[in-house]
Amino acid sequence: MAYNEDGRKLVELVRDAARHHNSTWEALVPDPFRVNFLHEEAEEAAYAEMARAKAALRDHICETYGISLKELSSLASL
Image (cartoon, rainbow, N blue to C red; front, side):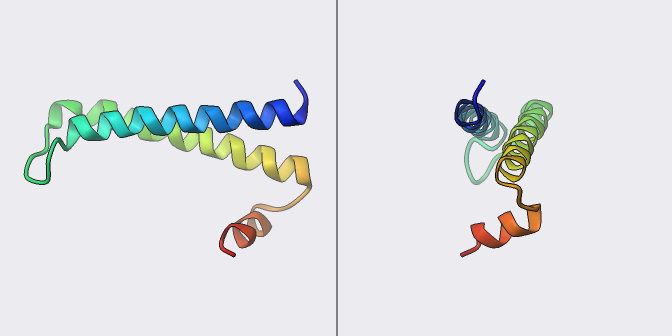
């Protein structure tokens, strides 16, 4: 897979993971006054999945462009 295709695939994985986390979060916290602890494990797993997807995308960007994580963070905060 070419770099461009790799990056697009990684972005889609982050988006999918974020959507999944959003749905598990909504199940865990259905409204501001309730927490459904039956969904806690699924929410934690979805959060970890999203973190792994984001880390893979960050690593890809740094490797592709030859920049450090610190440099990437600096660019993201502009």
